[in-house]
Image (cartoon, rainbow, N blue to C red):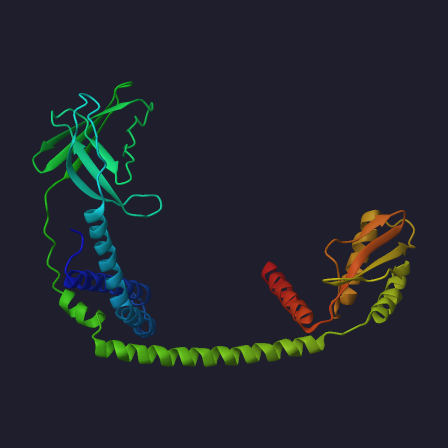
Length: 365
């Protein structure tokens, strides 16, 4: 039977709680206390350790108390379902020995817990009345269980297994029938009783909360959640205000204004006859443009990168940007596309993009 008394599951859960909280506490002790060389560092480490215990370890203990009943019930229901399945599942009939064809006897059954989909299945074991080998095993749906046969790790040949018992050990010897490679595995069968844990009771009272302590934890958790939400709200308001201030700094130019801006500055650099085509209005507001190079002897690469740099510098403080598909040159005519940012969320996107570029540029240095 898989189902055990309620107290077994409670004790199992409490031991796990103590172990988890101990590990978390030890982690913070090693991180913050350690062997600090100076007195100020020791004091600071002690403070960080106490804060970590309060905000992390004690909260973990509270979470474990909060989830205790739910998880204990789930574990009991899991084992109860196994018992029910084990009791109601019917073994397949007419299982015969593959050697002598005798009808095999049912000698046992268990829950098979290694299914790929994590579902429970009942596995029935059968033995020949004449003791022929091997035994056979079938699932409750009639499918025969066939274990994966071991192969030699060196040549992938067939392996013969031999199991013997020695004092306190089970010795399994695998011998390759092809290359003779031998591997021996020993399993200790001695049952070692758990060592006494003199500090468990003390830690049990520290980490396994009573219902009264658990209710205080829920109150504290609720208060912290409210404070955190208020803090997030304030941060959100500050961020929204900052974003609006940055958006207000952007020069909002219409199509005619951006054309005049570019025309004047490009002519200074010997690019002329700037022409805008009709805008492409869809998800984005995009305007194709062409411009001609008037400077003799300017290399093709310099034409493109020079124009690109001029446009980017002119538009950096405006609501317009050169599209990422770049600038192309053919027969002295350079072409590209500009995107105009108009809606509030587009301008916010532009601000965030500018800030990312600044951070990237700063880190690049």
